[in-house]
Amino acid sequence: MNSVTSLALEPARWQVNDQGEIFSLTYGDVYASRHGAWSQAQSIFVDGCELPTRWMGSPCVRILETAFGLGVNFLATWASLKASASKARLQYIAIEKHPFTAQDLRTALQISLTTLPASLAPLVHELVERLITQWPPLISGFHSLPLDDQTTLTLVFGDIDAVLCSLHGRFDAVYLDGFAPDCNAGMWSSLVMKRLAELAAPGAIAATWCVTDTVQHALNEVGYTVNQQVGSARNHEFLTAHWPQKFIESQTLPASVVVIGAGIAGASVARQFASRGVSVTLIERDQPASGASGNPVAVVRPEPGGVDNMIAEFSAAGVGWLKRWLSVYGQSVPHDFCGAVRLLRDQRRHDKLAAYALTVPDEWLHELSNTDASTLCGQTVAADAFLLPQAGWVDPKALVAALIDHPLIDVKSNAEVTKLTRMSSDLWCVGFSNHEEIHTHHVVLATAFADLSPDVLGIDSARGQLSLLPERADKSLRAIVCRDGYITPAINGMHIIGATIQYDDLDANSRTEDDLENFHRLQRLLPEFVSDVNELRAGRVSWRGTTQDRLPLVGKIAEGLYASIGHGSRGVACAPWCAEFLATQIMNEPLPISATWVERLHPLRFSKSISPKS
Ligand SMILES: Cc1cc2nc3c(=O)[nH]c(=O)nc-3n(C[C@H](O)[C@H](O)[C@H](O)COP(=O)(O)OP(=O)(O)OC[C@H]3O[C@@H](n4cnc5c(N)ncnc54)[C@H](O)[C@@H]3O)c2cc1C
Image (cartoon, rainbow, N blue to C red; front, top):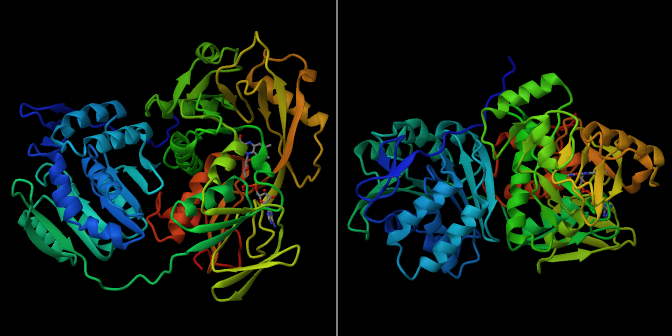
């Protein structure tokens, strides 16, 4: 029997009790105090952690919450930031083992927020809508929500012990808001407190409604100075615990950055910096999106697989981020998350995925018979299949245009960088073909390949040709169909069929034999869709930067030099999220994924003589 470690979660089991409170059937405790969840969130967590002062004094406030529940604490925090005049970023990471489904979250929040002060109601109700629009599928792991230019919420679905060990970053505030210790002791264990101490930034404040001696002792033991306080909300006692100002974080945050290459990778990096208030010079030897990112359409799909499948985890993070980003900023970007029907190469792989599909929600993956898959697509598919409801397509060129549409991004087109030299320990010289130079402390390579940095090895060049098929009125296709290649529904009158892959092939002309190869690909997907190869038209040719492990190179190469390159066949789907991953590293923010990914994506991991830890 094939087995895959499941990503499935048990959603929150809840009901409204006789007192009108949201009650957890799993833990036998209430999610929110009957005395007013909102005022408790405000007085214990927002005020207790001195956030109104921090909003005005920090470029980024980093908050960790041990249990997200209904999200009332998060909403109160987000509303507090929005109501202030601060331009600070909010990086909020929340752990949750039993998340609500989106529908349950809406219902439960409507009940819980009845005590909201009338003056705040319009703002908070708007924030609730934004949160629910971006609410992720109930799959374990990290889900980052780019809620607005100031606020990123990363929900980590899983058990607190495992999640705390995987977090990377330091936090200015910690919200201890699990169910009571006698209902959920694991949330308050000394192991948890120890890890919370390791994750505390200098001067961090932890806050909790739980004032038991055991909790005070546990916080004291790991080095926090604990104060018992009386809140403004109905005189309830609560604790704040201060982490000493033991050391000062020395990292200087960049005020400006030079990004080389204006494909999807560079445009995404530029956008993530600009949204943090950093000025960006984005340099492109041609025009934005003139490399592989200039293809007419890209398929974006999470690769299905269990927790032991790196590509599955990576692509889920990428597609989830892109989908949510488009929900906020994608009005001008043609895209459609229409779902993809995935056929498997052989029976063994099919059976493995079928076993896995049984363990995850239908919104993530489900098996389809050949007949059901054909009905869903509107065309006969070649085999039994799986539906990936989170998959879709996007116009990459329009996506690049939307990403760089920001007042802090200055695009320099027709400017080829020919030399990158280190001038001192932290100053770089970017040299152009016309002999002009820019001197900068922070450079990001987003050139697809590593030509400008000889230290970076391991990227191959793989040519790819798309083929086009004009739409036919009697043969409509409603979903993407994919296997080792793909066909999209008709977009602007054309189906896109992709794509060939040829290593070390620099031929920029489209070739009829490549269309034939794509035709055979299509036959393996939809055997009755096209009978004559001559119906296909040659599509665009471009090059992917590929790596052996099919993961890109993203991270620090040297002091002040970083990369987001080698995005292979998934760059449109995943480079936008990689930009967030890189920006959090450079800006000293918590990572939107587990710490292991720093090494997994390290740009020097194929460079034998150089330690990835350097
Ligand atoms: C045929 C084909 C089909 C694909 N289909 C999909 C798909 O369906 N889904 C998906 O997610 N991905 C797909 N991909 C992959 C995806 O297109 C790439 O991973 C992605 O576009 C890479 O983006 P990038 O910004 O890293 O590179 P590019 O888009 O190539 O951008 C790099 C930019 O850097 C510039 N540059 C390079 N050197 C210099 C220099 N020295 N000075 C100044 N500028 C420089 C280049 O001009 C270029 O504009 C496909 C790729 C191909 C080839």
